[in-house]
Length: 153
Image (cartoon, rainbow, N blue to C red; front, side, top):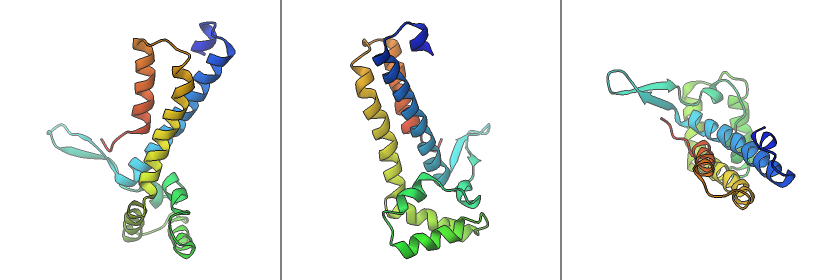
């Protein structure tokens, strides 16, 4: 909307739209990664407080990007076992914990991190060529980096 209101040409409107669409997707992918790893925040006492339990999505039977990336990284029988174990939303903690460990060990989680970063970097290039360097363009770029690389806290 900002590009439209500013009277930008169609090329810039498209580049801005594409960038923020990919930033949104990167944010969702990083959320899936954070879900698997758990999320903490600074507590009132100065320690860490868990704000999102590890693998809530797997416990709920949700299909996430790490599971999608596992399809190409694990043997087909193992992918089916994981699918059946978590898809119903009633997997026990041990099953979920071993699934998370396996997704990490086989690179499915890191593939998600790489995908999120790649989406933002690829979408930034056409936009970078169309906007002048400024405080605003730096902040737009930083927002993309943040969305793609959020951490567990």
